[in-house]
Image 1 (cartoon, rainbow, N blue to C red):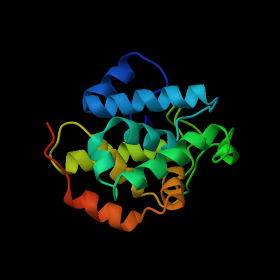
Image 2: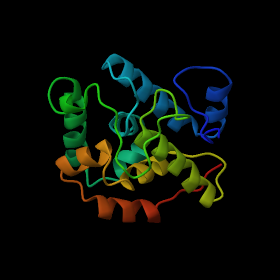
Image 3: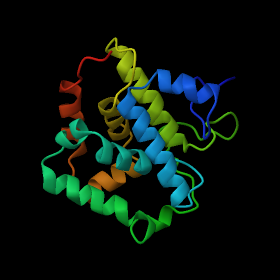
Length: 176
């Protein structure tokens, strides 16, 4: 069975299909997450890479949090990933258990949790009759997996993820 998610580690038709399903901002986040994973020597894009890209790229994502100090604390944890915090993840595959571990037919270059988050973002956008998933859709999908690395970082930075999820459910902007 073919995975319905068309993202991959490289370029080509699969990448073009994904890009057509994402806003320009979210496509930028995905590219940044791929570069960060490569630069950090990680085999896969994980949810923490995606969270980092979201925080750096989209002002609406930053506005969803409880002010600049909370965003600064989050970015501090994410930046430390390759030099301290997060080293326990190096060389491991993120599998939160929220979805069955994919051993065959998975998304190359993506952790199972990151792939599930992208699927969740697309599903959230479609549920709101949007043609493209946006950054807030991905943030909501990341927060929806309590065992993901992104949520671990959020908890370390004292983010109330239930409150954030409720805020995001009320803030779905109109898509294109």
